[in-house]
Length: 168
Image (cartoon, rainbow, N blue to C red; front, side):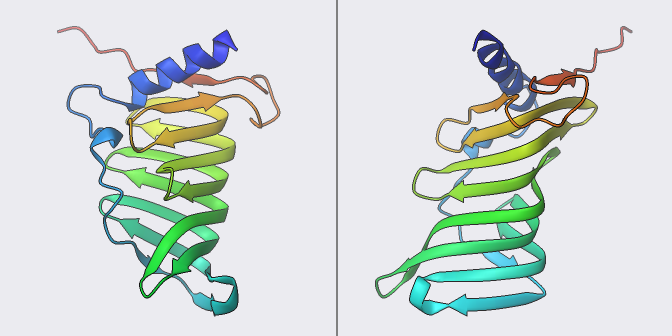
């Protein structure tokens, strides 16, 4: 558990509010959501839309790509997205930060994005690998834990590399 807290702190340091970086805390999750895919299926009775084939979802400067997504919504005269479930090589990018994993859930009510399954974060030459990444769009806090990380030397753990500034 302590390792998870330390890793979460490192994730915040590496991918949070380092000077000059875009902060996820400044993200406006009330922006419109635009989407494109090879195929779109409206399942009106279930209040969902299934997008498949090279799915691209943009919300402001946040982009999610995946092989397939299911968008759940409510309809009270106006459609309101509740949740996006994505599978098939999911990538979330914003600015120079990129996170990828096997699956993702974007919960619009809680304003939280969770990527899981072989999660990899990249920002410049900094790397962070783990099993699950949780991004809280309200607080700007991101945390990574090792559950579900890929088999290998660091299986079940969070690992990474931070670039060291070169002296003058």
